[in-house]
Length: 301
Image (tube, rainbow, N blue to C red; front, side):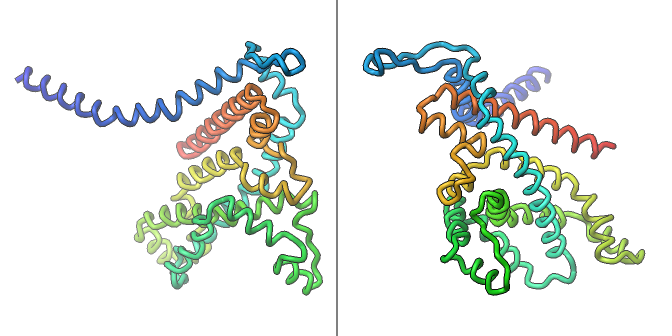
């Protein structure tokens, strides 16, 4: 009996190992190896000799590239820009997506399928295409939005230096609000209808039910969405890169990702680019850990 049990356990372990092997192979090949190569690359720099005619050679610099990145004002300013972007973008994105999901989940909503599709449709547009569309809509003389605003006596320059942040936040919100709204709406659909009906019987109105019943019950979905939004904000690249050609205020190193890209493919300093990427990854991991612990603490409190 014991022998047959042990044989059964071995078969289950072997079967589990066979099913998990492709995952671990892909994980190591696509995650561990690139990260390890980036860390290794960040420890070296390219040195030229003979006024550039003697070729280049790779020199070990230790943490020199990390010190150069941290000492560069452009790299530090990129984190400030991302911080301002998060302060403006996350409340607008999460708040608006949550309100839209609550409206769709309410008994007053009509044509839910149509509005779900209409709100999710911008997310199906590739990010670079969306950015190009909005650059067109931001350009004076071409944009029907600017013409409409000016016909109403309003003047707003979307490409001015002091409005660049708002313009980028608007593009990102347009792209991602439908995606986050679907997450909230799916979580709302999982709430037992008996709970909502009991609150209604007790005299609670739609606003009170939304604030006191529905939102607390989907707190985990809200925390997960905020975590994904923060990680996505740290990876901001496409929108400011496209907008930088039309708006001089958005430079080629406006975000840490753009800084790493410029270092690699414009300055050919791959060691500095790798160091900047590793620093950004460490910062993102620490921030994600903090947000996860904070949300877990609130759930258990």
